[in-house]
Image 1 (cartoon, one colour):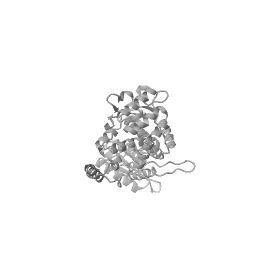
Image 2 (tube, one colour):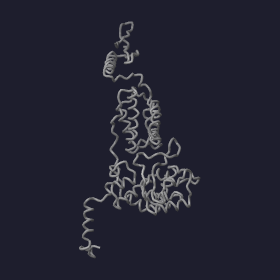
Image 3 (cartoon, rainbow, N blue to C red):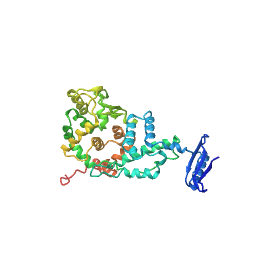
Image 4 (cartoon, rainbow, N blue to C red):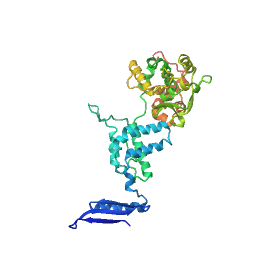
Length: 384
C-alpha cells in the first residue's frame, strides 16, 4: 500500500513529503515533494494508473530523447528499407535532436510538440546566418510523423504514458497539382536542357522527359534492364544514397516496379548513347567519367546550371517527369495507363497531381460532335 511520510523540522513544521509506493512488479519506489498537495496528487495518480493498467515507472521516462531516438533508429534499420531509414535519420539529426535531444522523454508534452511543428514552417534566419530556414509543409509533416513514431514506440516500451505527438496537425496540405504553363515552358526547353548537361548525361534528360522516369530510376538504369528487341524498359530499382554511399535500392512501393513500353526513338537514343559512352560499373547507362554511379548532388548542380542557361526558373529535374506525364495525357491515355507508366501507387495519386490536365466532359463532347459531323459540316474559311 502506498503511503506518505512527512519530515518535520525542530519546530514541527513540515519540510518535505515522501511518497512511498510499489510498482506493479513489486519494486519499491519513492518520490519527495515540498508541498503536501503535490504529494497527494502524485499518490492519487500512481494508484489510478496502477488500477487502470496505465502505470509507467517515472524513472523510465528519464532517458533523453536523443538516446531513445538512437535506439529506435537502430531497431528501424532492421525492418525498413535503407532509404527510409536514412530519411528517418535525417529528420532526427537535422530537426528532432536539436529541438528535443537533451529533454527527458517524460518532459515532452503536447504544447512543446505543437510549438516545434509551427517552428518548422517559420524562417528564423538572421542577417548573420543564425537560425533556420522554413521547410516545406510536406517536409514538416514528415518530420512530425517521425517524431510521433519515436514517441509511439516509447509508449509501447513503457517509458511514457501517452504520445504527445499523436494527431498533431502541421500546416495546410500542399497543393500537388502541377502548373501546366510551367510544364509547357519546360517541355519547350528540353532540347536546350539536354544540350546544357555534360554530354554523357544528355540522354538522361531526354529519357526522363519522354518516359517519366524519376531521377533515381534514370541514374540507376542498367543495360540489362533495357530490352532493345521488345522495346521496353524494366524499372525495379533506383540509385539512392544509403549511409553516405551511393547504391541500388528498391522503389518506394510495389507499384514502382514496372515495365514501360518505349518507342523506337527511345531505343535508338539509348543505343547511340551507349555507343559513345559504354556502360560503366554494374552496367550503369549513365555514369561519371570514371564509370561510377552519378551522385544526385552532381547531377543537380549541372541541371541547375542548364536551367539557368535555358532561362528557366523554379525548375527541378522532377519536372521532366511531369513533362512526360502531360504528353501522355495529351495523347489520350487513360488514368490507369498513365499510372502504370509513372509507377504511382494508385489512380488517386495520379489524379491528385494531374487531374486538371485531362480534358473535361464538355471538351470531349465538343470534340466528338465535331469529329462525327466533319463530313457534312465543313468548316468555313472564316472559321479557319
